[in-house]
Each structure stands twice: as C-alpha cells, then as structure tokens.
Image (cartoon, rainbow, N blue to C red; front, side, top):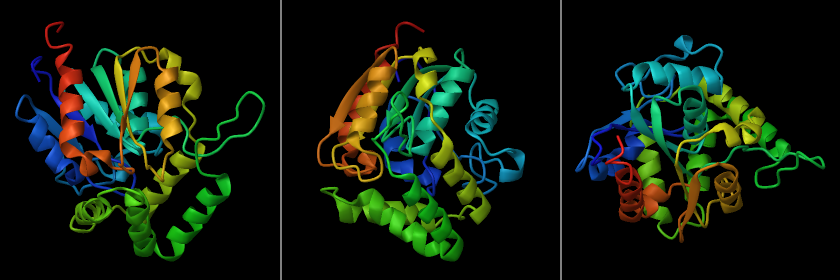
Length: 264
C-alpha cells in the first residue's frame, strides 16, 4: 500500500491462511501482507499460529488479543467470515493498532435472534447451528466437505472456488475437533451489534450477492451500523468473493487502503 502499513489477512472458520494466497500476491505488489492463522489453525509454523492451548478461553476477545500480540504495531486488517468478527473485536480493543478494516462475507451475528428489540433475521436458525455441532462430532471430515460446498453454493465460479477452498483446508494441518467446536460456539453465541457504534475505524464491507452462509443483507446491516463504513456487493459471488472475483476484490481493497496513504 502507498502508506507502507502491513495488511493482515484473517481467515474464517474451518479454513487456513493459505486460502488467501492469491489475494496476498495481488496486494503484495504494493505493500507488506501477513496471512495470520487464527489460534489452533495452520500448524505451529504459521504466522500468528498460536496453539489452541495458548488461547483459553476460546473467545473473540481472546482470539483478538492473541493475534494483536503477534501482529505489527500498526496495520490494516482484512477479515473473512469468522475472521471478520475477530477483526471487529480487535479494532475495538486496539484502536491505535488497527488503522482500517476490510470485512468480507461478514456479519455481526451468525445466528438468528428473536424479540421486538433484538430481532436479527439475517442468519441461520439456532436449530441449524445445533445440528451442525452435533454432526461435526459424528463425522468431522464429512461436515468440513459439506461446508466447503455450502461456501461455494450459488457462486458463478462454484467449481473453482470449491477446489481452492478444499485445497487450502485439506492440504494443510487440520484444526482439532475441539478448536472447530469452540469456533462454532462463537458463531452460535456472539452478537456484536451493540458494539458496532464504538468501532470508529474506516471500514469496507464486501459481500457476495449469492452468499449461502451469511446473507447479503447481513453485510448491508453491518455496514449501516458502523460509524464510518461503505458497502460493496460482489455480483455472482458466494461466501468467498476473494476467490470468485479475485481481481475485483483486490482492486477494491487496494483502493480502500490507498485512501489513507498520505494521512499516516
């Protein structure tokens, strides 16, 4: 980037930092990029890849603090899916460290909520989340394969996207079942909506129009709730638009980070 600040890339649940290889190559033309592993992912040699035992309890706050300790003192952060929730939490807890946020396929709340004031329809039902947790205990590899299919569902580049998601996950050390279940617990229980007005960093929210994991409406609502955010749809993309439309996403990120290049 023109500012010279590093860009940190945070992957999602049941993924791996290498899912960002193509995006990292595109962004590295203009600046430093670090693909950081969420704790419990990526094996011991991954950048930021602390073991799950180093992140107890396994919460968004602890994940964010663990990554912040391993990250550059000042950086821009790109978070995808669960990684976006970690990025939001990190930005709130370390506002002097995180300059700008890019949030891909992001939502403040993965699970539906009911109630007059707390309703949140842009998500899966609690029953689906419970079934997912139960299924992963019976057949973890099968659930991971089905999740790859769900992330690419409806994408105009579904075959290519699914192949890249499978490659990133299954050709690298898999997270333990305990880490996967702990991540699912975050997806079931976390609700960041009340915290969003306190996240002051400029944010870019990117969402695929065909996302079958987090509805596009969730990204729009997230963008509207953040004090300084803009929303951009990626037409025809599913849950991994940086794989479906890599050039489009890279250009949007590059332009967004470059905006602050002269201000730092």
